[in-house]
Image 1 (cartoon, helix red, strand yellow):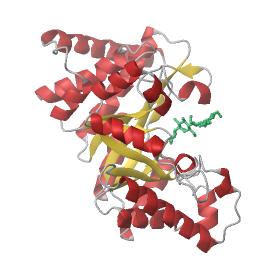
Image 2 (image 1 turned 90 degrees about the vertical axis):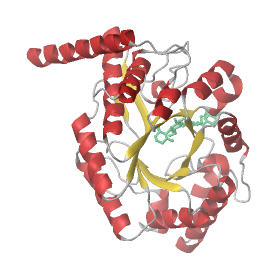
Image 3 (image 1 turned 45 degrees about the vertical axis):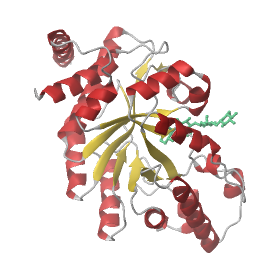
Length: 354
Ligand code: G3I
């Protein structure tokens, strides 16, 4: 155990040294950001956006627009936000996000058409026949995808259908419509916007294991049925205490490529069990570095999105008490070792040194 720990710290020390050498060898011009390097490397680098912060925190908004070329609305395009009443749609929140993105020449990743969380009470407390619920979902997808057609070009169509032990999650949608709701959702989204990239999005299946295999089998079936699914979103919500093995993630990306599917990293964050220490920050940087390298090395991964980008606004502390500091900028919006690790990977990738 001691030897493993020593090897681990030696590797971290070597990576830190490489980091210093790369940065010293050719310090990047001040104006270089993740976004400028990513665009040179033909990979999209994104972040989810906290809509309240976007409205109220100008420094946050400026850093978002400067650092990323893609954004994902954290909550404003979910069912409860967009369809708050049986006869009411509310697009203003989502529209504000898209307006910001267009002003900053950023792509928007639509999140999320069909999910079992954040559903409005009027929907979940209704007594719907299977046919009524199917028509309600079809109408919702056509209305939302139609509203954003041409402005939102990629969508998380369905999220988190596989539960944590690899079975089919029993949800409001699966119980109300039946298990074919997944294929139907993709079909309707494709009919509403034939040009959109349509993803299945899930967590906990990034590397190997039972859940990853179940996700692969689900996608294998959808592809075999001719369902218009373009790719898989690997959420990558992870922790310094237990990150997926890069080799297993690479192998998973490769087998999804075998199905003809793109892979997106859709929601990466790397939580730290508090208190934060410099060793934990270096370990966190190593995980960000390793996952971006794995994406770049895969033929079918050219989208790398974080779930938030600054510790000032993150879902982690309230959902995982005792954990935090999961992102690449600190609460003062200053870059952390993780930011520099991502810059290193993209700089090295740009110079072709492997
Ligand atoms: O909008 C209401 C507000 O009116 C109310 O005053 C406030 C207090 O109750 O709640 C607000 O809603 C909150 C919402 O975020 C918007 O801030 C919900 O309570 C809260 O549960 C919700 O949390 C979101 C969570 O999904 C819900 O499960 C997080 O912000 C969001 O980061 C998180 O994101 C999900 C992805 O969409 C899917 N993948 C997993 C990821 C983490 O759960």
